Image 1: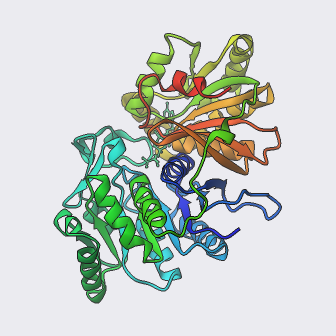
Image 2 (image 1 turned 60 degrees about the vertical axis):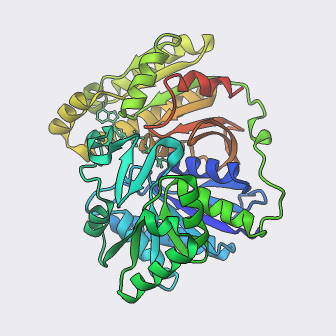
Length: 426
Ligand SMILES: Nc1ncnc2c1ncn2[C@@H]1O[C@H](COP(=O)(O)OP(=O)(O)O)[C@@H](O)[C@H]1O
Ligand SMILES: O=C(O)[C@@H](O)C(=O)COP(=O)(O)O
């Protein structure tokens, strides 16, 4: 299997978001969970997205994991590797976007890396290096309250500079509007000046098409689904994709079994989706302090679900509003509480699968990563889109048999996302 495009995603929801975009734009794509075991039979594809859980780990761990994935992708023919980051640039001053970008660039022989989290379809745009989320500057958006990586600066040149060893530049919208030639000329002048990463403005898909065309001629880029769109369209335009396009129908053949939703995202969107789900499904709100105190709350949740799940889908959520999250973090620490709750929600997800759940929706990137790891799912085929950035996924090589999943990024999906997702999973 020779691939055209490789991607390393810093979390699992982000990987499925990118895989969805690549599929929609004509690339046959598979999402692997980590580097697949050599015995795993993967389908013939144009692109592979390797999902890693490296957004919130120490930078040195993130760099090591990304470097191994890069080698694996290059060995399979990838001429370009996209480091898939969050469209809201989720990270801290200690990393990991800067260190991983620099390491991937060095592994590929150096050069300037284009970096943009723009994703117009979900309202993420970058202007003069500043990230806007649905019309609000990043630091005024709900991302200011993220439990693990609160974002307090919308100026991405500044944010990336704090995470990088080398200088960071900006390619502004005027240059991008002038076309690929102007962008290349600007990159050349940055290279001469010793800059190794540039934040690129992008508001419209046409800006990402320009950036994709330029990026494809370089070995590495860093961005969200918008840059994936640009790269996919550039590849298709180049005539190198001969498959006749990607299809998603095969991925949603019915799997039967029970269905459930597990949520650990504390985003504004997820909190509202949970309120709306309460009107049509049983929803259990976990007590985070009891979750941290020991296994009793998990046992209570499993038995609560056991009494209801044969009658229809159930929802189990750790999610809480920013004030509650801060209170818990002040008692137990940010990382410790996040990690303990991810462990608890992953155990609950695995217990539900043990009891016959085969259609599972998980809300939250870290939450999804922990659950998919516990379930030991090796890879996913990409099904149709439920909402921008969230496809139906079908497991590949799964020990429990085929399952359908949706890994919902905290911020994505309309208010009826949970019912919409389950309506597409049979
Ligand atoms: N009630 C809570 N208090 C504190 N942290 C929580 C709570 N519920 C969930 N978390 C943690 O918040 C983090 C949410 O991150 P994530 O799952 O990536 O969601 P998102 O996709 O919204 O970023 C996880 O580490 C999760 O365990
Ligand atoms: O790019 C995006 O916004 C998403 O694909 C993504 O990475 C979201 O991360 P989580 O909100 O942590 O799921």
